[in-house]
Image (cartoon, rainbow, N blue to C red; front, side, top):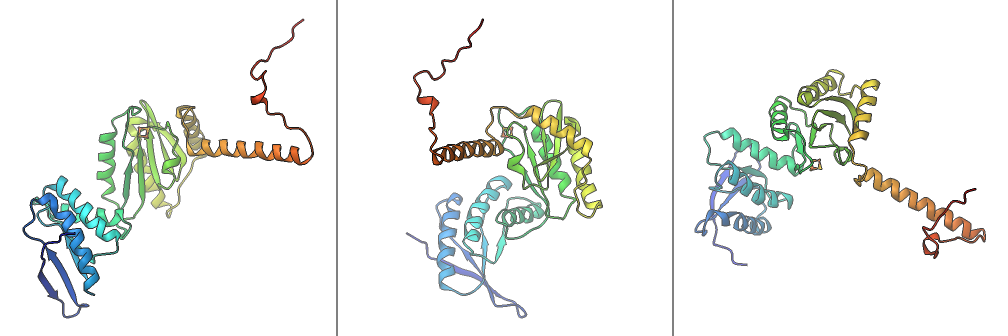
Length: 283
Ligand code: SF4
């Protein structure tokens, strides 16, 4: 693969620190969109050749949106390979704290560092029945006040159950008029949709006030469980339903095998020419 000649533009020493931090800067690339692949390839090669810490960054990455994406791709790829010791995010913004936030999000996504809550939200689809954009933005804003690395999930509906978010410490799922707060995949309480965010944070605060214990009111849990079962689509193949179907199948196979082992004759009704033709004799 073609690689541009590179230049060690900054090799800094810290008297009390380990040794060097090397920043690889690339020049002469045909457009900023090309920076990530060249940065990735060059840093991979550099990491094989030198035993020093590497400082990663995508120079002139762009605006908050495009720059964050390029940085996430470039730095994320290298960090996932175990390359890189410090990171730098460069965005076209006067708000340097945005660059720090992006850096933390990349490190958190790769589980290299834990800092503050992790927010997960479903991608939404035609089943969505409430203003999830506003809800997610509000949850994200309020989570900034917390330092603990809890995971909070926002699901647009309960049609597929809440099993996919069972790893979340807390979560909400909503519908047109009512929604539900859950914790670790278990219903906590049913609430009106317009109170979902407030009630979510009440539960989170109660959790911390109780020494990181989820507080469950059995009456509220029962009400939420009822709401969940009413809102799940009966035809949806949730992980729980798939597991139940597989269990049923395994039990049927085990019964058939046991019958055969006893010398009994197992009738396969589906292959019968009268399959499906059942009648009831009357009179
Ligand atoms: S949770 Fe509901 S709204 Fe969100 S993507 Fe899944 S089905 Fe769609």
